Image (cartoon, rainbow over all chains, first blue to last red; front, side):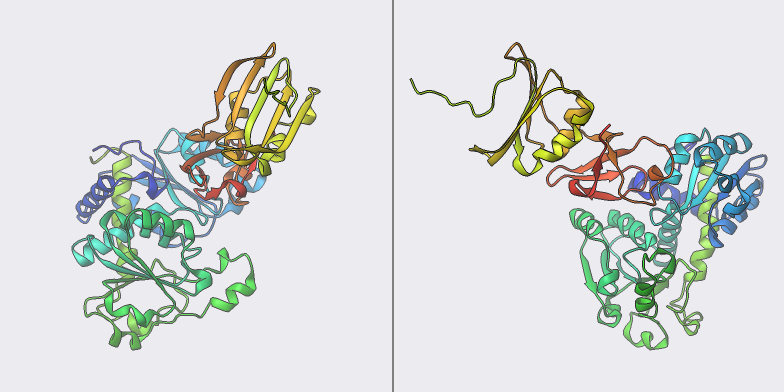
Length: 304
Length: 153
């Protein structure tokens, strides 16, 4: 299986076999390979702020011996002067061997991939896709549970606007997981995703009460209520403190439940849970570097 | 012999769109951009139809619909038929069929979609035929046929 030259735009572009292959290469990337991408340049074109995605891509490239150029603020790019994404990419693909793009505009990564002659990786395009997050989430689950098959996975928080939830739920459907969708009614999973999951034979249970299902779960994937995705500030105010997990959860879970979160968190998980064996969200963030190392090496054709 | 009453006048040359759901007839006229042409157009609504209950028929003189136009019609009237008429005879019947994808025909309703920010040809893939559901190939949102605007040009 060769990923050389391939774009990573949407998790929907990847088959189960593709995903398993990426996870296998990610495992190989746990060991140091400091010269694998020597002489290669990554362009980081970030048109909106990001901490984890940008840092972990930079770290991944540096750890494999490559170099990084780019920006992470629209204000310093020519987009501010009215340059199109198309033109920006047509320039960047001459400056580098691979591009990571992040933008609040949905579909911008697909457009960038069409414009570019070098591989494009989507670092998040608004409310749409963030495929490298989904891959690192899958890698984290596999690492923590030793498998992906037949797990009971709870999603908690903003399931309406949360792109990480949508992509991970769809990706998990390859492994016939049972999904528990825990959210206020107004922030439940959009109907077309539910229809998609139903067609794939995935059982979904919807609830507003985390304690009603927490005893069944192998994984609890918590998300932030994202202020920036709400069209109405009042709506955000209504829901921002709906859930706050703390030590009281511990009496209502399996002993090997793992709690994940794509971060940043803003109060959904109390720090008192951080030191429990259940919390794996920082490990999850760390896995971002490993998986992104694998993706960079794969699309640059340095591993097969 | 029983006299057949023709409710819709025949045309010499042009296109006839038949078996349109009555409620979609005016939307179809709109997407055919009648103001750009001088050809006469006759419209009949609420004709009795065994299959559909009530149907609409549109006849356009001296204009022969293109594949793009027929594809547009398929969004609103997937069971319609289009006949090309020459010298009062049906020269060709075009089967209205929902294509696998619509290129440059629809406008994405998502204001944050890149197709509404830059000059790009839109692409929608058909994810379900009945009821029709279309997925924008850029922002990946899925829409029903009534949630999308059809380009007139």
